[in-house]
Image 1 (cartoon, rainbow, N blue to C red):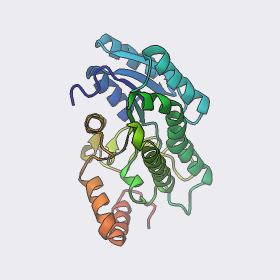
Image 2 (image 1 turned 60 degrees about the vertical axis):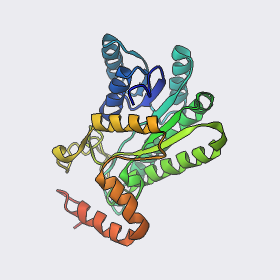
Image 3 (image 1 turned 90 degrees about the horizontal axis):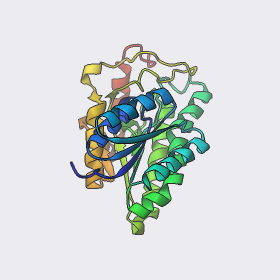
Amino acid sequence: MKNALNGKVVVITGASSGIGEAMARLYSKMGAKVVLGARNEEKLALLAQIIATEGGKATYVATDVTKEVDCKRLIDKAVEVFGGIDVLICNAGISMRAIFDDVDTKVLHRLMDVNFWGTVYCAKYALPYLQASKGSLVGISSVAGLHGLPGRTGYSASKFAMTGLLETIRIENIKKGLHVMVACPGFTASNVRFSALTADGSAQGSTPREEGKMMTAEEVARIVAQGIAKRQRLCLMEAEGRATHFVKKFAPGLLDRIFYWVMSKEPDSPFK
């Protein structure tokens, strides 16, 4: 894995914090030239400076992935500065916590705009360069993209949509050498949970889950790098994801009940 990203141009969305920041830091240390996209330009500038101080190469563009023009600008920057793209990691995303009965449909639109359309826009403009390099297109999905996650209707829907998009792009590019990977972390200790949207669209502000039992952003970054090196199709990162993938094939009804039970045990669960 050490040499898998050495010299490669890696574009990362949602790079200012959490999993995106962890990937930027790790991959630059592995020799990658990283291109950082996120809405917070100040955080991106600081991260790029830290990477440069540590001997790495980084550039950045303030990017709101819900805006097609911003996504094009990010891809253009990568090509302008580093001459092409070897890896695109569509990591920018938001979550939610509310049952469908209660959620405002505007929240669902927001989830799709960020998680799905953000992937569409970046992949569309990066695709010619990834085809030329026979590179990797990676979507950071979730266990919620393998099976519906109660209380996260918009999140599951957006991750299923991302998976469908990426799988279709993979099939269309069978003869072009493009690697496409859907990466599914479990619950991860990152700020995505704190900014998760509630039924009315306000930020959750706290998490109902225990931090110490979650994956770290650094662990996710390392496993994604391994998946890229092995050119995996589906990257499942822990027992929960592997079990979900397996049980769904043979006992989907049982999986429904397990998911309901687990989510009903969360503090302040919407399931009464």
